[in-house]
Structures are given as structure tokens and as C-alpha cells.
Length: 210
Image 1: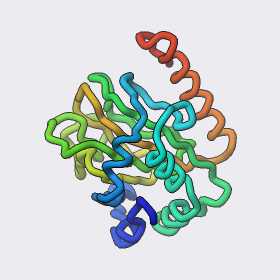
Image 2: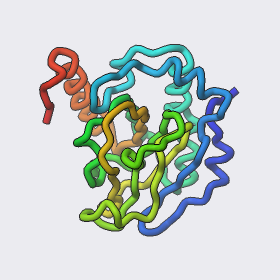
Image 3: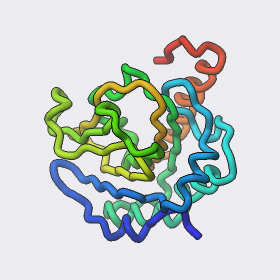
Image 4: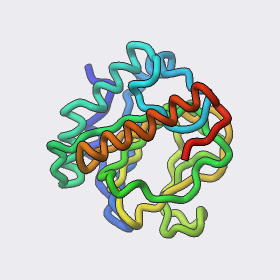
């Protein structure tokens, strides 16, 4: 039985303006959440880690397999009216947010669709809530805000105006990021970049990788 509520995703309309996005609360089915949380990688440092560099339990492994599986790809291709066949997928994991994280940005041009899947308890902090923004200058000029809690999914089509960010937060903030990218070169570049960062964090957690 799937951990993911793809039917809820299919029922949720894609908002078109100012850029394509979709928010699905409880995308992870409630009866799977506790096991996934218990098996989540123990990440105490900031930054993104490739899923293949981490240690985790069986429930989290099942989740990653579903996220990278054909049913997920087909559902997103249909929703965004985009051919994702032959488009590699990258999957990274975060466990700890730093005060410097969340600055306004758009994702790399090599990313076609960004999927963020949150795995935190009900979120009460004012910081750490991802905001979709109308411009690159003002975090308060937002049209949607997503608390990073309870299996919530946020996805959007990457583009030059897909600005997003969040107010400062320090502490545990669990999120998986799935991206379909343009080609194998982009996939390998992402793997090298995040793999190098993960390695440096292990040997020197205080050094920053550009």
C-alpha cells in the first residue's frame, strides 16, 4: 500500500499565476508518518545531503523509492503537462535549518520541477515557513505560505520568476527535495556538488562549501 496520496495530488488544482504551483496537505498518508519519522536520517548539520549518502531505516527507504518511482513521475508529468521521460530525478534531504537559510532565490535553471515534502510536527514557529513570492526583494510580499509540517507537499515549476524563501529559523526542520532535471549532465553535476558538500561537512562541519 502506497505511503503517498497521489489521488489527493491529482485532485488538487495547479495554480497558474504568478507561476505554476500546487500545495497538498497530508500528501504522506497519516498512518505512515510515525514510521517515516522514526526512520528519518539523523542530520544535525545544515545543508542538503544526497539521499544515497545517508543512513536511515526501512520506512524512510520505502518513501524514497516511491518518490523516485514511475507513479510519481507520471502524476507530475500529467499535472504540469510536461514530458518527464528521460529526465533524471535528484533527491536530497535536510534535517537542520540554520539562521542563514531561507534567503530569497529561484532554483537552478537545470531544474524543471521542484517538489518539497515536509516531515515535521505541527509547526508553530513564525520562521521556517516557505513563502512563494511576487518578487525577489521582499519576503512579506508573498501569495502563499507553507508550514513545513505533517507530510505537506509543495511543488512548483521552476522559472525566472519562481521566487521563494522563508524567515529565519534555527533548529530541526525536516524536508526532502525532489527535482526532475534537464539531462544526465545536470544530474551528475548535482550529485557532485551535494556529494562534495556532504563529505566536507563530515570532515569539517564548520567549513562552508561554495
